[in-house]
Image 1 (cartoon, one colour):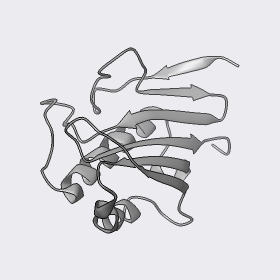
Image 2 (cartoon, rainbow, N blue to C red; image 1 turned 90 degrees about the horizontal axis):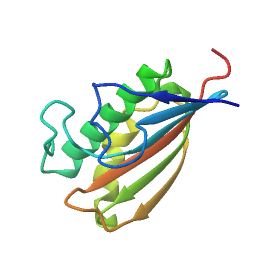
Image 3 (cartoon, one colour; image 1 turned 180 degrees about the vertical axis):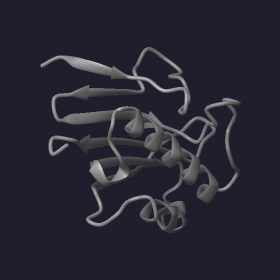
Length: 127
């Protein structure tokens, strides 16, 4: 099964040797995204709510470049710099995904200057 690289200028360019996203068969894998503005490349927001919203906009842009949507997401992995931010993060997060919500793993992580990072897997086999 061939890998198809997904690239868009509507999300931040990778900060290292990895792809923004890959389509492999019926799945789209989106690399961990943070709250950087794709145009300025600067941190977008100082609160967990602002950073979560920008992070999910970046995820959405990569999914859309692959022909997918947030409704196609089946799995997310969320890294929070401080788990005490969870309830505030969760209020923003839930508004970006229709029901049924994707399965999710949320962990506390040492993040470099950001509060949140999210990667996702989407299933696009029915399209």
